[in-house]
Image (cartoon, rainbow, N blue to C red):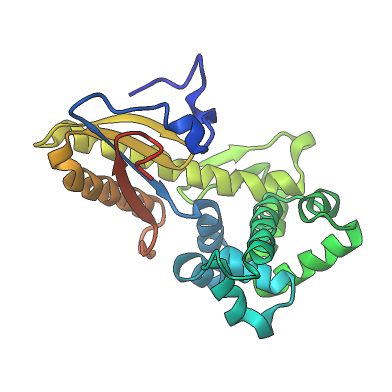
Length: 269
């Protein structure tokens, strides 16, 4: 497995322009999989927010957020249809709304204030506050999770990840963004640690040639031979789902992982 230093491969952009430079050697194929919306999924599970859980697992969470933020409930069907059809006259407008809602959701999840959110949405601080209120109404438990963690952090000095691992926070760093961010990122990281360990063990024990090349963010990248492509994809999906269940036992793994394969990293998605 490649070590992530000089250069730091964790910072490789998702752009296909960059990733198509990573090409499988002749006679091999790259297999890649990632966790779908893992941060919001972690937040949904840790906060017990059933609405967010439903949207993340079975819906289009960023589209639902856009509909909520821009008050498009009466035009929901049109909105969903437009973002799925690039020939639709509202495709550009609605996909931009979805993109803004996606950025907004992640920034809010990590404790951003109105000023930072206003930059994402390109609006005033006051309007950003109104957007926050709408998001908080739809996902109330997820929104209040930050305050629960903030109180816990100030009481004990520690934040707890879903694995039971604790993170000590220095007194001067005990802020809402830290309280919101650390448990989510830490828990998502624990899932990835387990996925790496499980996949490496599975590769060592595998009856066909497969090797773990790299991990980036929420992705795992494998190398195998073309005739074993399907088997490698199935193996990767299985180990990543089991890793999730190690940290979140008894939860759903529906729509959690999807693997692809190709001659390069870019074409494997």
